Image (cartoon, rainbow, N blue to C red; front, side):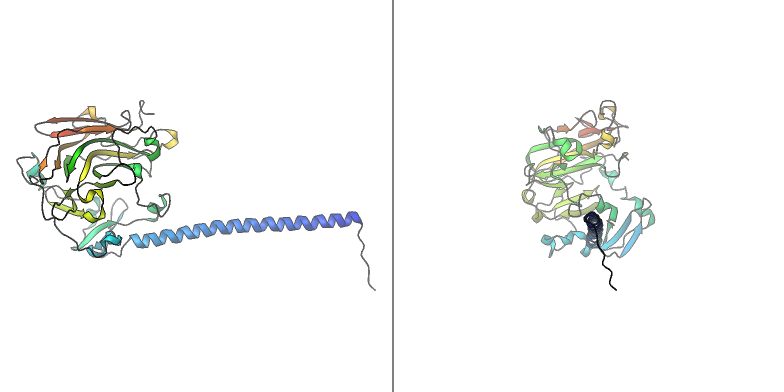
Length: 361
């Protein structure tokens, strides 16, 4: 016997409300699932992208060496080095030595330290655990964390346009936009084919893992816009046109082929020497990351960091002292620079500072 079930209008409304509520709960649960899936998918894509990038950057080594500071140094065959990933270098034949050296580079009479430089071995911390075999080059292995510190995988290893010091910058937002601060000496107004200097080396304290402190030479060509060419240390072989980097009198470390550049294919229009730090403004204050030795230039020899015996290579391939040195710093209360010259050191400057201090909050 069939039993008919009847619902009052109120009951029908109540059951209808239940059905709607259940539907909404189900639909909301679906949104949560889709959202989680999207996040997981994004994480998975990033992980795969990072792994692919690391595989491209880290070439198969002949030998690997564990450095005491935690780095891994891969000894990569010279013909497999990462530089050959650049399309312009696809068929490039490696040049092992420059065709010419600047005149005066090995003249001990011009530099008081010339004979001493030959006796100093080139050592790095990882050498404590081994050396790379012949026909290989040492390459620090890129880690996952290195790539993740960049704003994106595509941005990893690429410099921002504002990272290069711009003397006499009139842009009040220049410092804040780049996060990089400098204390430099510079020359401009001529054609330059190389630069040389002797520096003393310190161990500056770094406050944040994403910050750094460096001292170097910049060779620049073009304007401080989209078309700027820059090389950090080197001289140009006037026959081949390549820009070479040398340490002391004995170590020719490598070169940048001239055909990679537009303005620097011929010569540089400005040279800068000095220090650079990243100021990430932790806790809303200026970083305490040090530049140079962490001491201001007025503290002088034994405390402050310096560049001395500053020289440039002219169009006749001669090393010579520049006519004058300009100087520039983003915030002199944080990091400063002072130039000078004398018979022993030629053109020189002291530079650096502690970063955050009562006058640099």
